[in-house]
Amino acid sequence: MSNIQAEANKVIEKAKSLADDLVNKSCKARSKKPHTVQFSRFIKHYADSIQKTIQIRVEQDLVDLPDPKLASKALRKLELVLSRIAYILATLLDNHDGVPREIYYALDWFLRHCPTGSEEIRYICTPGPELSMSEFNEILASFQVANIYPELDTALKGKRFYFIFLPHEFCSRDASLMWPLIFHEMGHVVDYQFGKTRAIHPSIAVSYAELKSLANNNYTKAIEKLWAQEFTSDYLATLIAGPCFIWQFFRDYSRIGSIMESSRSHPAHKSRIMNIVGLLREQGLTEAARNTEELLKGISATGQEQFSSDFMARADMQEVFRYYKANCKGFTNSDLEGFIRSINQTVDNLVQDILNLRPVIAPPSVLYTIASFCEEIVAKASAQELIADCLSRHCVAEQFKEITVKP
Ligand SMILES: [Zn+2]
Image (tube, rainbow, N blue to C red; front, side):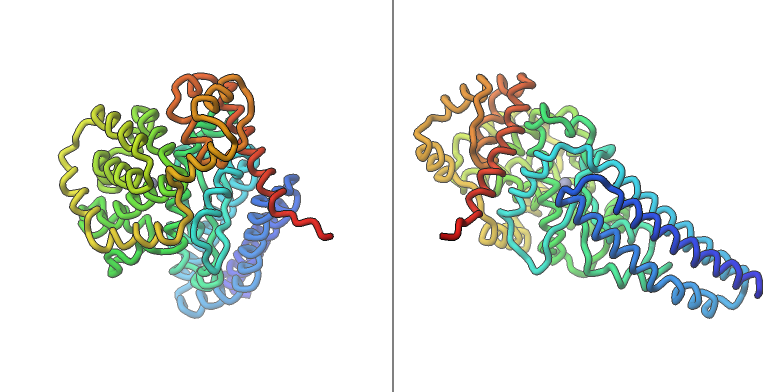
């Protein structure tokens, strides 16, 4: 056997053993929570795709690159990329179980209010350095898997899986008022799934990493495409959950300023906030809109407002908003008032209940609209823990509603 053939065999063996290790690890995962089970299934699909195609890929490398030096280099690169992806998946598998389950209740509730497509949205939350979301195909793109291992890329193309990265301060039940910021990330997930902002400047339909690199080189269409994603995620977070995202955004403004900063990847703050204010008004949440405008006075202008606002007003951007408004179950002031009437209560009483640590079983949109603007609740860790508990109770109540007893 030639040296290069021996090297090729080793790479096949290594790739198969990495795939086996991942499957074994996911089988051993103690948690049988639905999201973990979905993630394990996804890992199984990934591993099976490697088992089925690695030999074909390696043999093709040997045919395409008759020079043993070049073939050896390609094989080493293939092995390195597969090792890195396996490491990422193994780390996610190890770490994701520490996220409070109430976050999943809130995010699953959010997704139930979004359009249902042909494919279920599958995701896990996992601790990470900054609040962000990533889809698995984007991770593959960042390793140029489409060039290095096209058979794997093809096998996974139609299979999406999302990872929501949460800084450690989010992963605590007494930080439940921070969680509406995650609704913005879920907005990215929904828009990625439905591809509505991809229709803006369709000529540059590229991965997020490529888009960011084009934007860093001041390519206007790429910048606008990234902005479209941000405007849309703000819009979805507010459409479904009400004003809680924007209130938490203001509260955390100094801390997350670097993330939310007006930049090539994010539009100017003021235009983002005005987009949200406009939507709150449309939903009849006028008091929230007024309060938001008040808070807006404390945000300094960046000089990009006009540019961002002009972009937001474009017909194709407005078309994206219209699509989501027509296809999501949005939250309106009538929903808020209707719920409060149905339980014979007032907003003030419900605020007092939360402060006195009495559970309020309400949809997350109602619960957050009532609680997230109240500084007394924000300052009280036990009240925030209670809100996490309320999210859990609401989820159980919804499940009971779905159970029909046969006569
Ligand atoms: Zn974003």
